[in-house]
Length: 251
Image 1 (cartoon, one colour):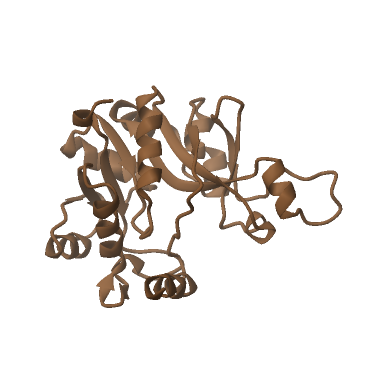
Image 2 (cartoon, one colour):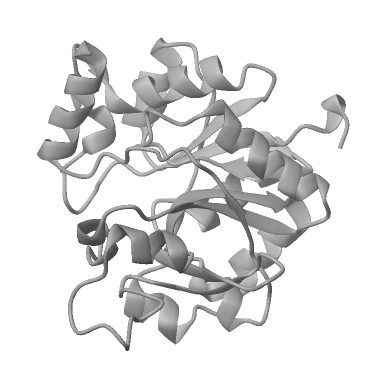
C-alpha cells in the first residue's frame, strides 16, 4: 500500500448513547469529547484523510466549528460499521479505518498497525492488547478475543475466554500473560468492497446476544485479522471515565 493509497479514517458518531447521555458533546475542560478525539486523530495520523459519519446536525455543526468534515447519515443504523458504510458511498475511499468517537487517546501506532494489516491483504482487521489485570478480564465491558495461530479471530465475547477450567480461583496476571488472553480494541480496518458487504450481511444471533457487531462477520463465515498492540486506548463511557481522562490531561 503506497502513501497515495493510505486508508481513510471514518469515525462513526451517534448523538445518543446508553450509559452517558449525549456523551460525544459532553464538554471536558471546555471542549466536546468528539473534538478531543478529532484533534487527537489529526495529531497522531496527519497523513490520513479524516471524516466523521454522524447521525445528527448537532454533531455536524460542532465538527464544522472546529474545522472537521462530516457526512450526515441515517439515524437508524444498527452499528457504527453500517454507518460508515453509508458514509463511504459518498467519500469513495478504497480502504477505511474505523476509529470510535469516544477514543480521545488513540495512538499513531494503532492506526499504523491496522493500515499494515490491510496492506498485507486482509479484507478486515482489528486490534487487541494483552490483559494484565484479572479484574478487567472478568469485566463484561472489556471484550475478549481469542486468536487462531495465523492471527484471525476465533471468537469475541464479553465472558472470560479462554476459560481457566483447571483453576479453582480467579486467574492471575501471570496466567493471563502466559495464556495469551487478549482485550479487544474497538478499531477496525476494511477494504471498501468488504465494508459494503458487511452492511448487506444477515445480522447474527450471537451478534445480538453479546451486543458485539463484529460477530456478524464471523457468523457469516468471514475472517477478521487481529493485530496486536501494546498500547491500550481509553474509551469514554461513564462519568468515571471522564474523570480519568481529566486526570490524564492534568498529568
